[in-house]
Structure formats: structure tokens, C-alpha cells
Length: 310
Image (cartoon, rainbow, N blue to C red):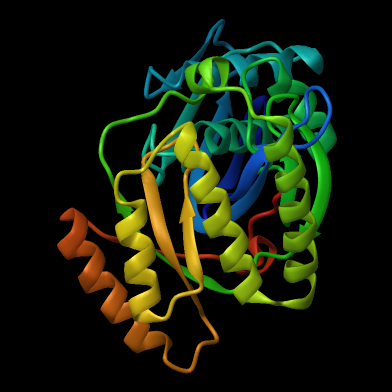
């Protein structure tokens, strides 16, 4: 990861950017009032990386792999905004599977914006990134370092909550893919009563994150998963809740418009190793697959890798 630096040789310019993904959302719903759909991010140590090389003699910008056309669009937009001709090569790689609810598309786009900014020597703020992203699709709040409540349909920050809490997520994948854009366009409306509950849950979560009350974080995430069953049901949710209770986890978390769900375990739990082992075994027996992800402070991780998040 230490090769992610900006270099320039004559008119040849390079830039690289990175963005963490998420394991679903701690909470997702809508607040009272129009156009108040929101989500709360859960950053994990898996990421997308973009590397942009601007070539002075190239008359076209190409992306690899070719299906990353959204990244190509946003790179061209950033370059056009700053009066730079779009010629060269954009390479996007990711540790995040597509269509699972781990913000793979958002991470690709944020990483691309950062890489493009570095290649042309411009610092792009999170607010400016929002403006570029707004022209592409609904987006998670990955341009912010903290756990944030984010209006994903409007692509606009609602509020910063706290640094990512120290959590391990033992996850399973139910299979298939969910197209987030299509899901957002066809989702069952959220009722007035549900909106009031989501507002209460967000207030609870904000206080819990601020004071390190991970038990409440787990309860809020579980309740959000339960409410989401009416819109993107998870067939393993009831069983996973029972497994969480058996292993002594904090609660369950889901990708509200994806296919993954997981058990939350505190990294500070004195029996962390035992609970992790038990949850890993149980999840594999349940679904035939298992993943283990960790939250982390993106700033410290990126600083160790000598990468700026912009």
C-alpha cells in the first residue's frame, strides 16, 4: 500500500486514492418529513483503490476493468471541472464484492475522485466530492472519516457521529446480488410510525457511539435489521439473532439493500477470541460461508500506509 503516492515527470501525472467500504449499515431508514432517507455507515478495513495516469499525448481516458464505467464518468467530470483534458489510464481495484451491500460502487467512486484530485494537484473536500457523486447515483457517506448519518439519496451529509467503534463482524452472505439503484427506486414506502422510530433509533445510536456504549449500538443495529425485513428480507436473520445470543454478541447488522449480514462482537471483549471462534463456526454451519471483518479508524490505518484520504 505504500506505493500509493503522487508523482509527476514532465507532463506525465499520476495520482492514487483509496476508500474504505462498509459492512452494511448500523441503521438505515427515513426520518419524518419529505426526502429524509438516511443511513449510518459502518466502515471496515476493506477498500477500493484507484490509480490514474494522465498521458499528455492521449486523447481518451480508459478505465480498467472496462465495466467500471461509473468511475470513468466521475474521473472525466473532475478533470473537466478543472479544465484538464481526459487522456490516460484509470485502474480501479477493490476488495469489496459487488452487489452485496458493502458499498463497492461508492468506494470505487470516492477512490477515483481522490486519485483524480491528486493527479491534478487539487484537494477535493468531502462536500465537493458529494457534488460530483450526486450526478452519478445514490451514495454511501464514504468520503467522511467518521461514522456518519448520511442522506444517501440526496448524497448529502446529515451529521458526523463518532470514530468507528472497535468491532469485529462475523458475516455470512445469502448469495445473489442486489442493485442498489433499482432497490432505492422500487422500495416499499416507509410509514410515518416507522419514521418516528428511526428518529428515536438514530438519537440512541448517536449517544451510544459518543460514549462507547457498544451494547446499545448492537441493539439499534438489530432493530434496524428487523425493520428492514419488510423491504429486503434476510432469510438467515432469525437464526443469526439466535446465534448472536448464544455466542454473547452485541447484536446483528445487515446490508439493508444487499445480501450480507453479521454478528457484532466488541474488540474489547475479554472473551473476544472465544466468541469469534464460536461465531465463525456457527455461521459457517448456517450458510456454508463466513467472513470476518474489522472496523478501524480510517485515519490511523491510512496514515500508517502513508496515504491521504483528502
